[in-house]
Image (tube, rainbow, N blue to C red; front, side, top):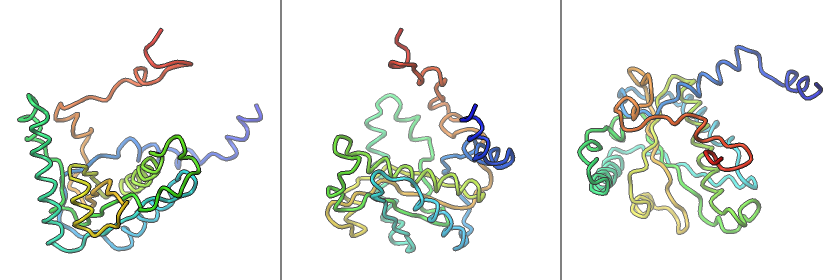
Length: 222
């Protein structure tokens, strides 16, 4: 009873809670963008949200590079297109289906950011001795914060992972040990997809929660 009372005392109002869950439900991996610029103050708020993400050992391993030249966008787009073709070849019988999908908006979105893992991460041991990949998990949390904030701002965001990390790192002059994780396309959109685009395109479906939730043992095992 005491715990229930504490939760009630710390909880947001019903309207505020509804807004949080709405952002989660309506967040989309966007690929179609309008050419309108993103207001600088809005971009600042998105970066603030990302930088306030949790990180293991408070290491804050995320680094952001804002791409502001057309030449760099075109070079990045070429890397994405090269990997898109390689991915299609690797998919075998689904290659043609994959090639019909729009997978990025690098040349279209109002803003493009590259999110990377910082260099010199080995010195951070707290929380990573047995799970060194927690640096990547922390960066993913930063991106998710930005994604939800973008949806609340009415802006679309798309995470592009089709690129060679070493070549993108070289293109952007990253130090040794740093690693790009995501190209983020951010901008205004005509509409948000009513469902995840890959569901609409019948590429995949969301799994029922019962298939991913287990009690006291691995899900699905008696």
